[in-house]
Image (spheres, rainbow over the protein chains, first blue to last red):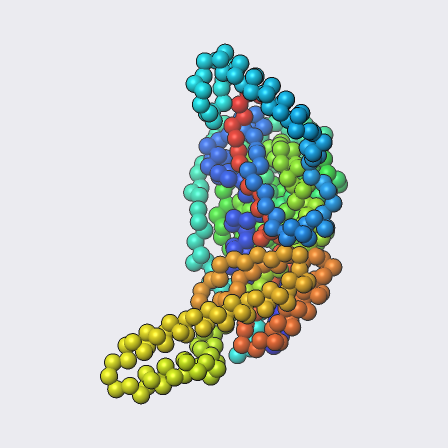
Length: 111
Length: 308
Protein backbone atom coordinates (compact mmCIF):
# COMPACT_ATOMS: atom_id res chain seq x y z
CA UNK A 1 0.00 0.00 0.00
CA UNK A 2 1.53 3.33 -0.99
CA UNK A 3 1.77 6.11 1.54
CA UNK A 4 -1.42 8.10 1.99
CA UNK A 5 -1.61 11.61 3.29
CA UNK A 6 -3.85 11.91 6.33
CA UNK A 7 -5.46 15.28 6.84
CA UNK A 8 -4.33 17.27 9.85
CA UNK A 9 -7.22 16.64 12.18
CA UNK A 10 -7.09 12.84 12.05
CA UNK A 11 -4.27 12.27 14.48
CA UNK A 12 -4.66 13.71 17.95
CA UNK A 13 -1.00 13.26 18.76
CA UNK A 14 0.00 15.31 15.72
CA UNK A 15 -2.50 18.01 16.64
CA UNK A 16 -1.26 18.16 20.22
CA UNK A 17 2.31 18.35 18.98
CA UNK A 18 1.39 21.58 17.28
CA UNK A 19 -1.35 23.44 19.06
CA UNK A 20 -0.09 23.46 22.62
CA UNK A 21 2.99 25.61 22.30
CA UNK A 22 3.45 26.65 18.69
CA UNK A 23 2.07 29.48 16.56
CA UNK A 24 1.10 32.65 18.38
CA UNK A 25 1.64 32.19 22.09
CA UNK A 26 0.73 34.70 24.76
CA UNK A 27 3.01 34.01 27.67
CA UNK A 28 1.41 33.84 31.05
CA UNK A 29 -1.92 34.58 29.47
CA UNK A 30 -3.79 32.13 31.61
CA UNK A 31 -2.33 33.47 34.81
CA UNK A 32 -3.07 37.03 33.91
CA UNK A 33 -6.58 36.40 32.71
CA UNK A 34 -7.43 34.52 35.89
CA UNK A 35 -6.05 37.22 38.08
CA UNK A 36 -8.75 39.28 36.51
CA UNK A 37 -7.52 42.11 34.41
CA UNK A 38 -10.87 43.35 33.35
CA UNK A 39 -10.05 45.57 30.49
CA UNK A 40 -6.83 44.73 28.80
CA UNK A 41 -6.76 48.01 26.98
CA UNK A 42 -6.60 49.96 30.19
CA UNK A 43 -4.52 47.89 32.56
CA UNK A 44 -2.16 45.96 30.39
CA UNK A 45 -0.81 46.01 26.91
CA UNK A 46 0.43 43.31 24.64
CA UNK A 47 4.00 43.48 23.48
CA UNK A 48 5.81 41.32 20.97
CA UNK A 49 8.48 39.40 22.84
CA UNK A 50 9.88 37.58 19.81
CA UNK A 51 9.09 36.51 16.25
CA UNK A 52 10.72 33.67 14.34
CA UNK A 53 9.57 32.39 11.00
CA UNK A 54 12.08 29.68 10.17
CA UNK A 55 12.12 30.33 6.47
CA UNK A 56 15.49 29.79 4.92
CA UNK A 57 17.17 33.15 4.68
CA UNK A 58 17.87 33.08 0.97
CA UNK A 59 14.35 31.97 0.14
CA UNK A 60 12.86 34.58 2.39
CA UNK A 61 14.84 37.31 0.68
CA UNK A 62 13.89 36.05 -2.74
CA UNK A 63 10.20 35.59 -2.08
CA UNK A 64 9.25 38.23 0.39
CA UNK A 65 8.80 41.75 -0.89
CA UNK A 66 10.30 44.34 1.38
CA UNK A 67 7.59 45.05 3.86
CA UNK A 68 9.65 45.55 6.93
CA UNK A 69 10.04 48.78 8.76
CA UNK A 70 11.87 51.71 7.17
CA UNK A 71 15.60 51.28 7.15
CA UNK A 72 17.81 53.61 9.11
CA UNK A 73 20.64 53.53 6.64
CA UNK A 74 19.92 57.06 5.46
CA UNK A 75 21.41 58.36 8.66
CA UNK A 76 25.07 59.16 8.74
CA UNK A 77 27.33 58.28 11.61
CA UNK A 78 27.62 61.98 12.49
CA UNK A 79 23.88 62.12 12.97
CA UNK A 80 23.98 59.12 15.22
CA UNK A 81 26.88 60.45 17.25
CA UNK A 82 25.10 63.75 17.71
CA UNK A 83 21.89 62.04 18.74
CA UNK A 84 23.79 59.79 21.09
CA UNK A 85 25.42 62.77 22.77
CA UNK A 86 22.16 64.60 23.16
CA UNK A 87 20.45 61.54 24.63
CA UNK A 88 23.28 61.09 27.11
CA UNK A 89 22.92 64.69 28.14
CA UNK A 90 19.19 64.29 28.65
CA UNK A 91 19.71 61.12 30.63
CA UNK A 92 22.29 62.72 32.88
CA UNK A 93 20.02 65.69 33.45
CA UNK A 94 17.03 63.59 34.36
CA UNK A 95 19.06 61.38 36.66
CA UNK A 96 20.44 64.39 38.46
CA UNK A 97 16.94 65.77 38.82
CA UNK A 98 15.51 62.64 40.31
CA UNK A 99 18.57 61.77 42.35
CA UNK A 100 18.62 58.24 41.11
CA UNK A 101 21.63 56.05 41.71
CA UNK A 102 23.71 55.91 38.56
CA UNK A 103 23.06 52.31 37.75
CA UNK A 104 20.64 50.73 35.38
CA UNK A 105 17.28 49.80 36.70
CA UNK A 106 14.48 48.14 34.84
CA UNK A 107 11.61 49.47 36.85
CA UNK A 108 9.93 52.45 35.37
CA UNK A 109 9.95 55.58 37.45
CA UNK A 110 6.75 57.09 38.54
CA UNK A 111 6.42 60.83 38.36
CA UNK B 1 3.96 -5.46 6.73
CA UNK B 2 2.57 -2.68 4.69
CA UNK B 3 5.15 0.01 4.02
CA UNK B 4 3.05 2.93 5.07
CA UNK B 5 0.19 3.34 7.42
CA UNK B 6 -2.52 5.86 7.25
CA UNK B 7 -2.79 7.60 10.54
CA UNK B 8 -5.97 7.07 12.40
CA UNK B 9 -7.49 9.37 14.91
CA UNK B 10 -7.12 7.10 17.91
CA UNK B 11 -3.58 6.33 18.85
CA UNK B 12 -3.76 6.60 22.57
CA UNK B 13 -2.30 10.05 22.87
CA UNK B 14 -4.29 10.89 25.96
CA UNK B 15 -1.23 9.77 27.85
CA UNK B 16 0.72 12.75 26.63
CA UNK B 17 0.03 15.05 29.48
CA UNK B 18 0.16 18.73 28.59
CA UNK B 19 3.00 20.63 30.17
CA UNK B 20 0.85 22.98 32.08
CA UNK B 21 -2.69 22.17 32.83
CA UNK B 22 -4.26 25.18 34.35
CA UNK B 23 -6.87 24.56 36.97
CA UNK B 24 -10.27 25.87 36.27
CA UNK B 25 -11.13 28.74 38.46
CA UNK B 26 -14.08 30.89 38.97
CA UNK B 27 -14.18 34.02 36.91
CA UNK B 28 -13.93 37.18 38.96
CA UNK B 29 -17.35 38.56 39.44
CA UNK B 30 -16.36 42.12 38.74
CA UNK B 31 -15.88 41.44 35.05
CA UNK B 32 -19.60 42.08 34.70
CA UNK B 33 -18.77 45.71 34.18
CA UNK B 34 -16.71 44.87 31.12
CA UNK B 35 -19.19 42.71 29.36
CA UNK B 36 -21.90 45.25 29.84
CA UNK B 37 -20.12 47.51 27.37
CA UNK B 38 -21.45 47.31 23.86
CA UNK B 39 -19.12 45.28 21.68
CA UNK B 40 -19.36 47.55 18.69
CA UNK B 41 -18.15 50.88 19.95
CA UNK B 42 -15.25 50.91 17.49
CA UNK B 43 -15.85 51.27 13.80
CA UNK B 44 -13.41 48.47 12.93
CA UNK B 45 -15.42 45.88 14.78
CA UNK B 46 -17.58 43.45 12.93
CA UNK B 47 -21.04 43.93 14.31
CA UNK B 48 -22.02 40.77 16.06
CA UNK B 49 -25.43 40.32 17.60
CA UNK B 50 -25.06 39.95 21.34
CA UNK B 51 -26.89 36.75 21.97
CA UNK B 52 -28.53 35.96 25.25
CA UNK B 53 -25.32 35.01 26.98
CA UNK B 54 -25.08 35.51 30.69
CA UNK B 55 -23.50 38.88 31.32
CA UNK B 56 -19.97 38.83 32.64
CA UNK B 57 -19.33 35.20 31.73
CA UNK B 58 -18.68 35.39 28.02
CA UNK B 59 -15.40 35.73 26.24
CA UNK B 60 -13.93 35.18 22.81
CA UNK B 61 -11.83 32.21 21.86
CA UNK B 62 -9.21 33.08 19.22
CA UNK B 63 -8.20 30.44 16.62
CA UNK B 64 -5.97 32.27 14.19
CA UNK B 65 -5.12 35.55 12.48
CA UNK B 66 -5.83 36.12 8.79
CA UNK B 67 -5.66 38.93 6.31
CA UNK B 68 -9.04 40.23 5.24
CA UNK B 69 -10.84 43.50 4.93
CA UNK B 70 -14.27 41.90 4.78
CA UNK B 71 -16.02 40.48 7.83
CA UNK B 72 -16.41 36.72 7.46
CA UNK B 73 -18.39 33.92 9.04
CA UNK B 74 -17.35 30.31 8.95
CA UNK B 75 -20.41 28.62 10.43
CA UNK B 76 -21.24 27.04 13.78
CA UNK B 77 -18.01 25.05 14.14
CA UNK B 78 -16.55 26.67 17.27
CA UNK B 79 -15.06 25.10 20.36
CA UNK B 80 -17.28 24.00 23.24
CA UNK B 81 -20.18 21.66 23.80
CA UNK B 82 -22.52 23.99 21.94
CA UNK B 83 -20.47 25.01 18.88
CA UNK B 84 -20.76 28.75 18.40
CA UNK B 85 -20.64 30.70 15.14
CA UNK B 86 -17.06 31.34 14.05
CA UNK B 87 -16.55 34.90 12.84
CA UNK B 88 -13.94 37.60 12.46
CA UNK B 89 -12.91 40.59 14.55
CA UNK B 90 -11.05 43.05 12.32
CA UNK B 91 -8.44 45.73 12.72
CA UNK B 92 -7.45 47.44 9.48
CA UNK B 93 -6.68 44.67 6.98
CA UNK B 94 -6.12 41.84 9.43
CA UNK B 95 -8.61 39.92 11.51
CA UNK B 96 -8.79 37.42 14.33
CA UNK B 97 -10.98 34.37 13.74
CA UNK B 98 -12.99 33.90 16.94
CA UNK B 99 -16.09 32.41 18.47
CA UNK B 100 -18.06 33.38 21.56
CA UNK B 101 -17.39 31.19 24.53
CA UNK B 102 -17.93 31.10 28.24
CA UNK B 103 -14.97 32.78 29.90
CA UNK B 104 -13.02 29.74 30.98
CA UNK B 105 -9.76 27.98 30.38
CA UNK B 106 -10.19 25.05 28.01
CA UNK B 107 -8.49 21.82 28.94
CA UNK B 108 -6.68 20.15 26.05
CA UNK B 109 -9.12 17.28 25.73
CA UNK B 110 -9.45 15.39 22.49
CA UNK B 111 -12.67 17.19 21.62
CA UNK B 112 -11.37 20.68 22.38
CA UNK B 113 -8.05 20.26 20.63
CA UNK B 114 -9.69 18.84 17.52
CA UNK B 115 -12.20 21.70 17.50
CA UNK B 116 -9.34 24.21 17.50
CA UNK B 117 -7.72 22.38 14.60
CA UNK B 118 -11.01 21.95 12.74
CA UNK B 119 -11.60 25.71 12.69
CA UNK B 120 -8.04 26.38 11.53
CA UNK B 121 -8.45 23.88 8.69
CA UNK B 122 -11.77 25.37 7.63
CA UNK B 123 -10.32 28.89 7.53
CA UNK B 124 -7.19 27.66 5.78
CA UNK B 125 -9.20 26.64 2.72
CA UNK B 126 -9.68 30.30 1.86
CA UNK B 127 -6.96 32.14 3.75
CA UNK B 128 -3.37 32.08 4.84
CA UNK B 129 -3.56 31.64 8.59
CA UNK B 130 -1.25 32.33 11.50
CA UNK B 131 -2.43 29.79 14.04
CA UNK B 132 -2.99 30.77 17.64
CA UNK B 133 -1.87 28.32 20.28
CA UNK B 134 -4.60 26.36 22.02
CA UNK B 135 -6.91 27.98 24.58
CA UNK B 136 -6.42 31.68 24.16
CA UNK B 137 -9.54 33.43 25.40
CA UNK B 138 -10.08 37.16 25.52
CA UNK B 139 -12.77 38.89 27.44
CA UNK B 140 -13.97 41.35 24.86
CA UNK B 141 -13.69 42.25 21.19
CA UNK B 142 -11.90 45.42 22.28
CA UNK B 143 -9.15 43.31 23.79
CA UNK B 144 -8.77 41.44 20.53
CA UNK B 145 -8.60 44.66 18.55
CA UNK B 146 -5.91 45.78 20.97
CA UNK B 147 -4.03 42.53 20.34
CA UNK B 148 -4.23 43.07 16.57
CA UNK B 149 -3.22 46.70 16.89
CA UNK B 150 -0.25 46.20 19.15
CA UNK B 151 1.24 43.27 17.25
CA UNK B 152 0.10 44.49 13.83
CA UNK B 153 3.56 44.75 12.28
CA UNK B 154 4.51 41.27 13.44
CA UNK B 155 1.29 39.74 12.13
CA UNK B 156 1.55 41.50 8.78
CA UNK B 157 5.15 40.47 8.38
CA UNK B 158 4.40 36.82 9.10
CA UNK B 159 1.23 36.77 6.98
CA UNK B 160 3.27 37.93 4.01
CA UNK B 161 5.95 35.32 4.64
CA UNK B 162 3.44 32.51 5.04
CA UNK B 163 1.28 33.56 2.13
CA UNK B 164 0.20 30.58 0.05
CA UNK B 165 2.31 28.14 2.01
CA UNK B 166 1.21 24.97 3.74
CA UNK B 167 2.79 22.79 6.35
CA UNK B 168 3.10 19.03 5.96
CA UNK B 169 4.20 16.58 8.60
CA UNK B 170 6.40 13.58 7.92
CA UNK B 171 7.34 10.98 10.47
CA UNK B 172 9.62 8.16 9.41
CA UNK B 173 9.77 4.93 11.37
CA UNK B 174 11.63 1.66 11.06
CA UNK B 175 11.78 -1.69 12.79
CA UNK B 176 15.18 -1.74 14.51
CA UNK B 177 15.22 -5.57 14.53
CA UNK B 178 14.82 -5.79 10.78
CA UNK B 179 17.47 -3.15 10.22
CA UNK B 180 19.94 -4.93 12.50
CA UNK B 181 19.50 -8.15 10.52
CA UNK B 182 20.19 -6.22 7.36
CA UNK B 183 23.24 -4.56 8.80
CA UNK B 184 24.59 -7.92 9.93
CA UNK B 185 24.47 -9.13 6.35
CA UNK B 186 26.52 -6.18 5.19
CA UNK B 187 28.94 -5.51 8.02
CA UNK B 188 31.72 -8.04 8.37
CA UNK B 189 32.92 -6.89 11.78
CA UNK B 190 29.47 -7.34 13.19
CA UNK B 191 29.16 -10.80 11.67
CA UNK B 192 32.51 -11.86 13.11
CA UNK B 193 31.56 -10.60 16.55
CA UNK B 194 28.35 -12.49 16.43
CA UNK B 195 30.14 -15.70 15.45
CA UNK B 196 32.60 -15.15 18.23
CA UNK B 197 29.77 -14.86 20.71
CA UNK B 198 28.08 -18.03 19.56
CA UNK B 199 31.33 -20.08 19.39
CA UNK B 200 32.85 -18.89 22.62
CA UNK B 201 32.67 -21.27 25.57
CA UNK B 202 33.51 -18.97 28.46
CA UNK B 203 32.08 -15.58 29.29
CA UNK B 204 30.83 -13.65 26.28
CA UNK B 205 30.31 -10.48 28.27
CA UNK B 206 32.99 -8.42 26.56
CA UNK B 207 32.07 -9.56 23.06
CA UNK B 208 28.42 -8.82 23.70
CA UNK B 209 29.26 -5.35 24.95
CA UNK B 210 31.26 -4.69 21.84
CA UNK B 211 28.49 -6.07 19.69
CA UNK B 212 25.92 -3.81 21.33
CA UNK B 213 28.02 -0.71 20.88
CA UNK B 214 28.74 -1.52 17.28
CA UNK B 215 25.05 -2.13 16.55
CA UNK B 216 24.14 1.20 18.13
CA UNK B 217 26.63 3.16 16.14
CA UNK B 218 25.74 1.41 12.89
CA UNK B 219 22.03 2.08 13.45
CA UNK B 220 22.79 5.70 14.18
CA UNK B 221 24.94 6.00 11.08
CA UNK B 222 22.30 4.42 8.89
CA UNK B 223 19.47 6.56 10.24
CA UNK B 224 21.51 9.74 9.73
CA UNK B 225 22.23 8.73 6.16
CA UNK B 226 18.57 8.00 5.43
CA UNK B 227 17.41 11.25 7.02
CA UNK B 228 19.94 13.20 4.96
CA UNK B 229 18.71 11.51 1.77
CA UNK B 230 15.10 12.28 2.65
CA UNK B 231 15.92 15.94 3.27
CA UNK B 232 17.80 16.06 -0.01
CA UNK B 233 14.79 14.74 -1.86
CA UNK B 234 12.23 16.98 -0.17
CA UNK B 235 14.39 20.08 0.10
CA UNK B 236 14.00 20.72 -3.61
CA UNK B 237 10.21 20.97 -3.38
CA UNK B 238 9.82 22.78 -0.06
CA UNK B 239 10.53 26.26 1.23
CA UNK B 240 11.75 25.22 4.66
CA UNK B 241 11.87 22.32 7.07
CA UNK B 242 12.02 21.81 10.79
CA UNK B 243 12.84 18.72 12.78
CA UNK B 244 11.27 17.85 16.08
CA UNK B 245 12.44 15.23 18.53
CA UNK B 246 11.55 11.71 17.37
CA UNK B 247 9.02 9.99 19.62
CA UNK B 248 9.91 6.45 20.71
CA UNK B 249 12.80 4.29 19.49
CA UNK B 250 11.27 3.31 16.17
CA UNK B 251 11.06 6.84 14.85
CA UNK B 252 14.08 8.16 13.00
CA UNK B 253 12.58 11.40 11.73
CA UNK B 254 9.87 13.74 12.99
CA UNK B 255 9.80 16.68 10.61
CA UNK B 256 7.61 19.42 9.25
CA UNK B 257 7.94 20.94 5.79
CA UNK B 258 6.70 24.28 4.55
CA UNK B 259 5.51 23.95 0.97
CA UNK B 260 4.18 26.50 -1.49
CA UNK B 261 0.56 25.82 -2.36
CA UNK B 262 1.43 25.39 -6.03
CA UNK B 263 4.15 22.82 -5.25
CA UNK B 264 1.83 20.63 -3.18
CA UNK B 265 1.57 18.05 -5.94
CA UNK B 266 5.35 17.93 -6.40
CA UNK B 267 5.88 17.46 -2.70
CA UNK B 268 3.30 14.69 -2.64
CA UNK B 269 5.05 12.92 -5.50
CA UNK B 270 8.42 13.14 -3.75
CA UNK B 271 7.02 11.66 -0.54
CA UNK B 272 5.58 8.76 -2.54
CA UNK B 273 8.91 8.36 -4.28
CA UNK B 274 10.65 8.04 -0.90
CA UNK B 275 8.05 5.55 0.24
CA UNK B 276 8.67 3.43 -2.84
CA UNK B 277 12.46 3.72 -2.61
CA UNK B 278 12.84 2.48 0.98
CA UNK B 279 10.60 -0.49 1.50
CA UNK B 280 11.58 -0.96 5.15
CA UNK B 281 10.63 2.55 6.20
CA UNK B 282 7.17 3.40 7.44
CA UNK B 283 6.06 6.90 6.51
CA UNK B 284 3.39 8.84 8.34
CA UNK B 285 2.47 11.74 6.18
CA UNK B 286 -0.01 14.39 7.34
CA UNK B 287 -1.34 17.75 6.27
CA UNK B 288 -1.98 20.32 5.14
CA UNK B 289 -1.53 22.02 8.49
CA UNK B 290 -1.51 25.67 9.44
CA UNK B 291 2.19 26.63 9.60
CA UNK B 292 2.53 25.85 13.32
CA UNK B 293 6.12 24.72 13.04
CA UNK B 294 7.21 27.77 11.10
CA UNK B 295 5.66 30.58 13.06
CA UNK B 296 6.70 31.43 16.54
CA UNK B 297 5.32 34.69 17.81
CA UNK B 298 5.68 35.13 21.54
CA UNK B 299 3.60 37.87 23.03
CA UNK B 300 3.55 38.98 26.59
CA UNK B 301 1.38 41.19 28.64
CA UNK B 302 2.93 44.19 30.20
CA UNK B 303 1.43 46.44 32.76
CA UNK B 304 0.45 49.64 31.07
CA UNK B 305 2.12 52.32 33.16
CA UNK B 306 0.46 55.63 32.55
CA UNK B 307 -2.42 55.93 30.18
CA UNK B 308 -0.93 58.85 28.36
